[in-house]
Length: 548
Image (cartoon, rainbow, N blue to C red; front, side, top):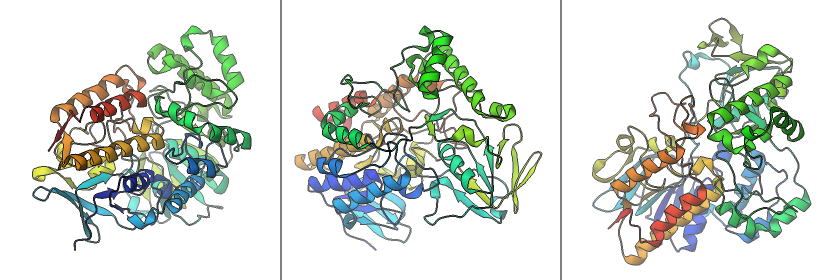
């Protein structure tokens, strides 16, 4: 059956979909949001695993569109955990009455452009049909869990879980034999908490990870107050920072355009690692902790400097682990710092000193199959009561490709992206008029403070729609040459960084998904430079687009 026809249909009620509702209402547009979950929150609704936490400071990982919201919300920790971030999402939904435009428990199964009507038609799994002139994919960059195909998975008699689809209800692990596959970001956060709760925890490691301690301090009232007094300055700095963070330091004088490295915490304040002696490097680690290694700018572009940092990391971790054999298994040897998104942890390495934790290196002894009673590697059978997949996501493109998107003249997005995603500015694709993506492939997205990126994307999309309406125009889509030029630009700015080093196989490249084309997906040129490109299109009347 056909439902109502709003001006805009939005898929997803995470932070992107929520802000889009608020912003488009301000522009006088009618909206309908379709959300698969039972409430708002997106990533923070689904990822409820023990230890789930944001890797951007809470006072920075927040919306700037409402001064009242900024002042009234209190963050309990410097880096907040999932429950508090979900509380924040719910508070926003309540404060701005967002739920009245959201239809929950509605999973979209098909997205089709109707050429003759110039409308997008969305079909839910329940058979409902929704139509609108404009369609916004606010489906998230990390929203489709990846579960590797391991023989025997369906035979396991115990409890199976995925960190990206963690149940709402509490899970009692007391006395249980728990196995977790994977040691990426989610696993690094979950493993210390699982070890405390389980009878025994077996960690099946596929690839060791570079991880540094996260700030675990409670929020101090004085710090929060100073942030709130300076939020206008902070927002300006976020928009002029390559990673979308202000690096505001209470009671300190900092330049208006501070630098932040790609994909992780504050960087650039320790100079060049090659320029100081081994003794000075070690003294900095002793004084400031392992995370100081991340602050050297040459680590991310100079292979020699990178290997110095890698060696420092390995030697420091060796000192943390009681068992030398376990320590060596935990050390990355075949790729360098900066290749993958930087991971932050709480007690990750010390967890492997516990008596109830076993580390299994799957490179030495690969998994053969999952059995009714547990998991078997080449040399050992492990009995398990609970099996947890911490195997990441089909990043950036997975959610879009699952939606069966069909554009003009019956063109499938899966065909257009057969050899990797092709889009302009991560906002639109040629052949799919009036279809927009929020933080899509080709945008800074996962290399940026996501809430800052979301605000910029949604504002740009909203302004574009109002421009079309104001001019009496029917549709907009990129020119083919704009797409190709932008894909070349995305690759160009990534060249010479650790992201594209020959040894680097990250989910930025799609390397974690079997059969997925290997193409670098996010834009690493920095958020300010990206905004320049977006704003040039707006200011010059969208010259990179075909406007009908």
